[in-house]
Image (cartoon, rainbow, N blue to C red):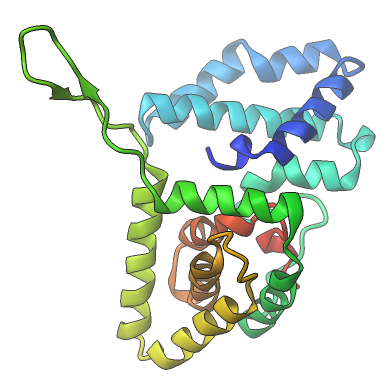
Length: 236
């Protein structure tokens, strides 16, 4: 959901759209409609709400179409399009994750390089994850305002729950001191220019440090603000 809202992702999806004009139309149709798509959507709706299933299906279709024209795409563009699945379902040329200490060192080394559009995009994602929208209200004439139905998925709520889970895991494993050191190191390395990403850098480093005790999806959610600037799978 967050990945495809990024301006950098939208730009690459435009490139993909142009490449598809010369692709096998029958294959394009197979990934965008018909029985295969209906079957995939049905499978997705068994595990997530319908609204989320539509987003997940669209994301999977984008990746499938990128694979279809991968030979015509720049490798960096393909990596952007494949990113939502890159760690949970490694793609072509993927490498095994580096040791935790090396991943954290790579993350800390890259944090000071954040600037311009990449930093702005990281800050925008961080804001979405830290400031959930105020609940909307439905006003009916002659009746008190009623709360609107909450969204099926609240990224900020999941982010905050994941962070609480990391802290608990660190405490239960007796790693609190080292966990805090990784967090503090990232916060020191992040740009202190008012962009609002300092604390989120610490959260991302904490997730990386505890990756062996966490579902990878949880680690990736905590890392999400920095996923476009330096993808998790590139921390080698």
